[in-house]
Length: 280
Image 1: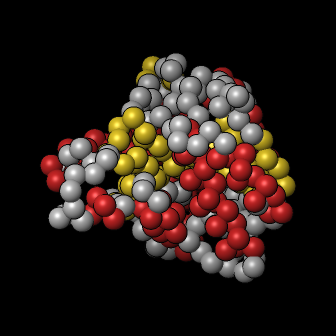
Image 2: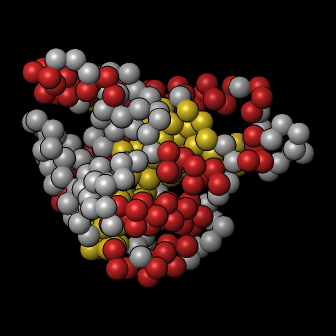
């Protein structure tokens, strides 16, 4: 795990500070806890702590080994069982963090957010639903963690092999932010999909407190720390817009600024292909 903390929390000599909101970040297929530093540092600079989890089994280790078996490693890392394990990783990591005595009272447990990326997100979003699900053996299970109060979703892929997405995501009962781009194409063997699939995930979410942001152009990895993907000129603009967007969503969701998202949209309108505001 990697933890980003606001300065007031880090300074040991500082007087007791007001508990800060906490974001738990789940990387995508082939990622690690060291990714998305531009977001972790930005959130910390703006008063939000973020815990970046690493998922053994679907992390950066998939890129190492015999190149002839890369496709099989990617497919193995994208199975339902891995997605379930990733969800459990997030809940476990949060529980372990909250047990740390040196951080007691530092986090606002009423303002916990989950930020996820890539294929794992479709399972994560489903976990927010109140209804139990079935595993591959037909057994009931429910991975919903009620400690999370909002979800920010980057590049969510479809539910591969499932045709009725609404039956999975219709019960989601918390605010969500969905972020993608018109060139957000997933190119993984057996798991290719275009940005329209990200929009379908947004459409299937049952809770009306949902926001959709589609940037024009870009790439699937433009939201990562990579600096040139999606275009050397566009890349930093989208990153800056995504940083500001995430902060606006958090401020609006947790009540400090009820017009934050509405104010964000015109500032970055020239970068957008589509914007859907949350229902009031």
